[in-house]
Amino acid sequence: MSWGKGAALYYRGDVEMVMRGLEEPSHKLVSVGLAYGQVQAEIMKGMLNANEVDVWLSNDSAGLAIGFGIGPMAEVDIMVRAEQAEQARWILEQDAEAEADA
Image (cartoon, rainbow, N blue to C red; front, side, top):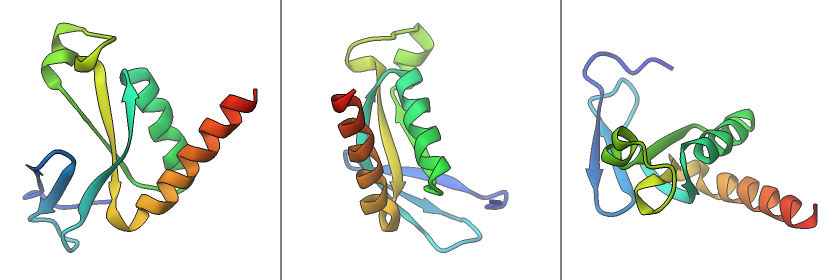
């Protein structure tokens, strides 16, 4: 997916993001989950990507730079397009249920 040179991501509120200056129309991003560390976030992203859900990870860059692997500074918001949020939540819920059954 190519969005061109002028692409920018703007933060607005706690979990809403809007992309502007893209080749495609603006897309609202919403949080569908919270990962406790970059590794868990990447696993969740991979699972959603495998189900054709576009994912952006939003984390505290200071925590990443300092190397925090636990605690609030290690939290990562799992962000998806608003129109894919219901599907993404369902996928994450199914995974949580499978882990609970294991």
